[in-house]
Amino acid sequence: MRVEAWRVAALVAALVAGMAAGAAGCEGGGAGSGMPGGNDYEFGPILEDTVERVILPTYKALFDDAARLEAAVAAIETEADLQAAQEQWIATRVHWERSEAFLWGPVADLALDPALDSWPVDRVQLDQVLASGLALTPESLTGNLGGGLKGFHTIEYLLFGIGRSRTAAQLTAAPRQVEYLRAAAGALRADAEALYLAWAPEGDAFGEAFARSGQPGGRYFSQVDAVQQLVNGCADIADEVANGKIADPYKERNPELVESQFSYNSLADFVDNVRSIRNVYEGVDGSLGLAVFVAARDPNLDARVRAEIQAAIDAIRAISPDNDPPFRDAILDPAFNAPIEAAQAEIRTLMRTLQGDVMATLFAREG
Image (cartoon, rainbow, N blue to C red; front, side, top):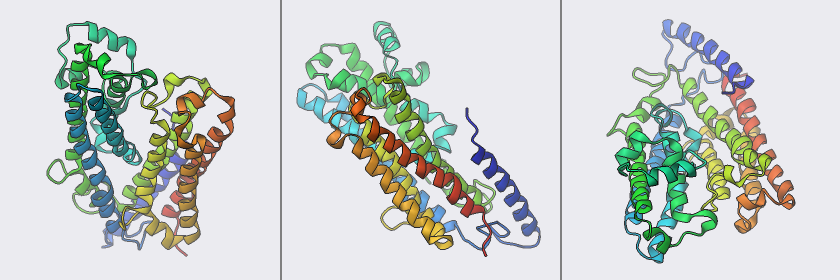
């Protein structure tokens, strides 16, 4: 596990901020008082909006569409049925990818990230399981198999095949594969439900505790700690897209390392990852995002972050307009080197701005 220098600096700043807040609290200061940067700033509305209008709706949509995917998989008999299930997989995938700016909290604590989204698929072990006598149910997959044998990408492989070559006739002629596919879809739906309920008021209410950070019963000691978590989450997914999802298969020229390679959905995944940053930073449909605070402290920085988010999205799309060829093939053609590297550069620029200037604004004193 890498420990970046900016994380160490941010941790030191957070500890200093925490001591300052504790001292202020002894003197009767309110939530957030004494905090560098946010000493007079009330982050509560931003935290509440991020939970209520970004995170919870994203996870609820993931759960709802995962249930639709389970039903679509169970109904596969014809080519039209298979196409409908493939389309539902892509629709469900959108919500997961747009959640990756907040891959912390329950998704990490409950190990739901690897259960839902491990890749590459371990096709050798998958064949062994298919040839075994293991009962194929959502519960048996959850209890007995690792992430490379379940989740989005195992379902993707069984639905699409290599090179999007899967046919309904192939699938229905292999009853054990159908059984596995249905079990995997059921397990994904159950994991998506668990993730939503971990955040939801009707479940474990992690979201309510996060929004109350800095208050009694809050998840984090201070509001600034909670906002720091939001910034870190955005920077982390930018890092993963540029330096993992794109870099690993590109450097190795290995399509097997490409995420969502079977569905040809890789570039859409990357765009949705950056959109997850946008949703946290700018808010959704008028909700308050981190941009409200950043703009109040440094309007020029706010404008730059917004521009860098759009530049990253545009650069990913420019790798292969109309997804022709898909990313798994583009990495093998030197003609695509320049746009791939340009996309990485734009995403890294955004990552550095989040790690550096946005984080510094959070901890800088006013005036």
